[in-house]
Length: 451
Image (tube, rainbow, N blue to C red; front, side):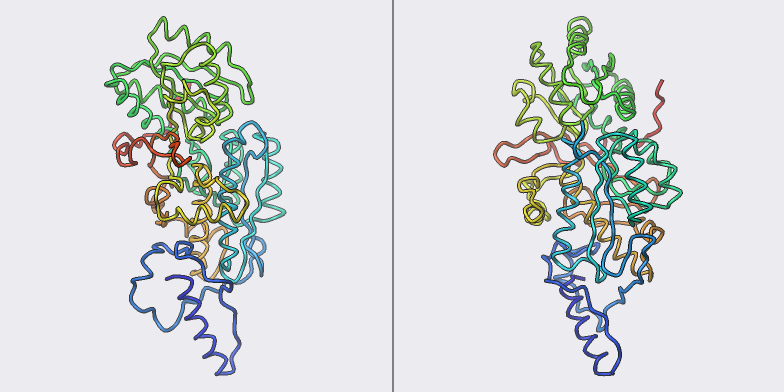
């Protein structure tokens, strides 16, 4: 049911109540949104639906300030790196969520309340993150998080997240520990899935996995080690050779030592593919290092952090021409249902052009899913962390931004991904093949042994 139809029904219902000398509550208020903004499970079906019943469902819920629901607002938090070494990736995720909520509030918010978006910058520092988490959960008392960046940070906070029954929607990485609890709702492919996807792309590019000799380069963080271990497993299970993993410190500005080892691997062991873990900033450092020593004929496939426009617009062309980044979402240039809305909301929030960034698309979708879950939870008569957690255990519309989401069963995550590169004509990101091309690569096995 669209918000416009709800408004009409609610207005007629309100008129009947007034005539009967009863009290009246306002409806959602504000201008009617575009069709795709309606946070229903199937927003496009409303236009052809049968006439609605004569009485709208009661979506009113009481205030619940202990869980971020006040008389005028619904508080939702975001935690990640806005100004630190991985901000080149994570800030777009926050901007996407902010843009969604800007549009949603312009169009009336939800449940007679506005979304209050509260992003916190930890600069990729676990100590900062602990402080920010306390602020958001104990001072601001947010209903949920729509992002939690940094594998070392999500690992550290996992016990508290479970204790507080705090829903975390779409964090910008999916690691093993997030599949253990009940509070993470991941729509980004797990690192194990990304490793499977990478193996599929590598095999296609070298004429079969038996011809692949792979070396990994990872940021020196837990997720870097986890991703490298999954890549090694995926490559070797399919008959390829995995040589070694080279680690790069977060914030490093040069990779001279790593390039010496990579050159040795190419010359002595026949390395013909590189897998890359890191943010766009780290990726650019590695790619420039490769260009500086003349390694321009070894293709790269990187994690979702590498699937950023800047890799191709700022990186050395002789290296980026053979580079892919894996991700689970589509940008607005891909002619999806959300395209016009993403561009409009990015502009409204002051982020013109970011609708062409995959991490922006991820954050935008997180906001949309949160909106749908809020209204679904309200149908129980209360809006709380507990009711929102239960409401998230189901299917959600994605407006074509990613594969269909179904978090009915545990663990709550999505096996969806493709290898992306930049489309110069549109300035946006495009997949080398459709999501369905890679679907058979995902083995669904998690819990890697790291030794």
